[in-house]
Image 1 (cartoon, one colour):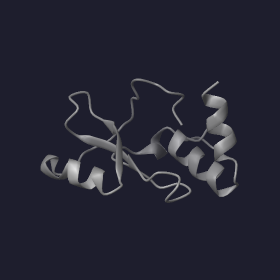
Image 2 (cartoon, one colour):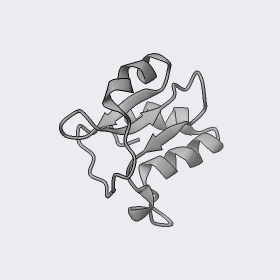
Image 3 (cartoon, rainbow, N blue to C red):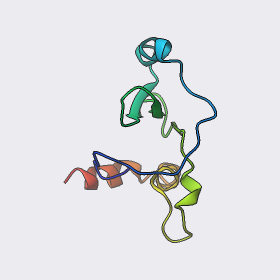
Image 4 (cartoon, rainbow, N blue to C red):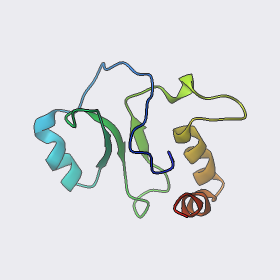
Length: 96
């Protein structure tokens, strides 16, 4: 949803974190940690594969801070695309 960006800058506060000792166990069970902080130790974004759920994304940051009515943040945009059955086409366009 972020156009294959290597770095994403979002506003957030950490109140809860994934126990680093449990990351591999959780990841191996199916929840994929697809975004980490700059040190690689703090989990920032997790998702389930599309084969398990049409759009299951969790993030530590607050996507509402960058959302605008005609320019939603990527997590919200992805949710709307998935709800309308348009996510696959959108993601395919990002890969081009």
